[in-house]
Image 1 (cartoon, rainbow, N blue to C red):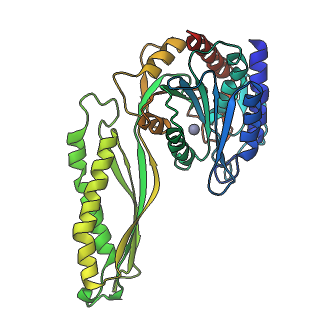
Image 2 (cartoon, helix red, strand yellow):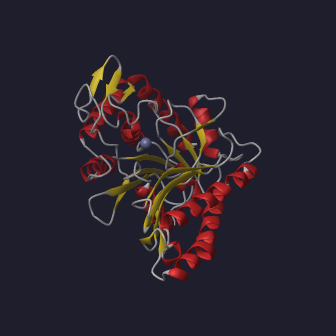
Image 3 (tube, rainbow, N blue to C red):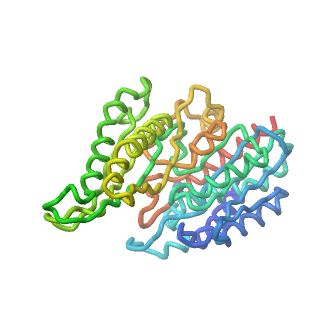
Length: 387
Ligand SMILES: [Zn+2]
């Protein structure tokens, strides 16, 4: 156990040393992980993004075929600019049983533990496949997982379960809301404020758009699942920013609305998108283009993180609850890649070392004790995979 812990901490030190901020490359880190997993006899694939500067890693131990389990983590970390760190964020610092460094809790600690355990898993008679999925760009909209999942589907890889090792202080998490962010740009026609009919007022159309969004709030309250574990129990909409126009007496030529919703069930997200889409296509756009054919409304998707829906049947939740000795699972207010894996038909649970309270902050840390608990969970997992 001591060796295993020491080796995990050594690996964590290497991983923290790769400054894999989402904007930058993660290739060195995935190459390192790929060679370690390869040395354990895993079949390793790297899938690069279009720019060629980032890659997802997918590796498998044990037999081919359906079923089995995925250990999943993201390789990217949030930036350190404008944060007041007491030490170099990309050099692991151990102090009083805590390991400081960017990504220690979110979520290189879990990746280090999972990769280190591959050595032991490779010695077992695995009855089902054990996969490792390490993705890029989670912090900027789960882009890596979003491209990995169709790749798995294409290859007919259908794992039954996934453990997402986001920092939950090793608590068992079975659900979280989704998070969808949009920027909508209204392009109208400027003109003199004295003749509103000769222009297309982008600010006014933006206001109508916002009013339609807000009118959906009531429906969303009605649609809340009876047993919703969330606070509040329904899907929320927030209009975060409205920009547009130049002055009192000018017809606003351009306007912009930034809004988000946090669906408690994915069908709510579809409901809102469909409703606002119809409103734009059937009412706003025809009215704008009636005056000025070039007028338009352009929606940019900033990010769509699928929620992790709480399911009665969830084999991954039940398994991990047994492994960590938890009685009961919880929900969390932050988003993860879990919903994307769930969409592929897997049962999914979120459970990993470190606290979300330390994630994204200066002096981010994970405690040695949390890494130890994670290793214990992963060791017990190995026993399950041979049964
Ligand atoms: Zn994370």
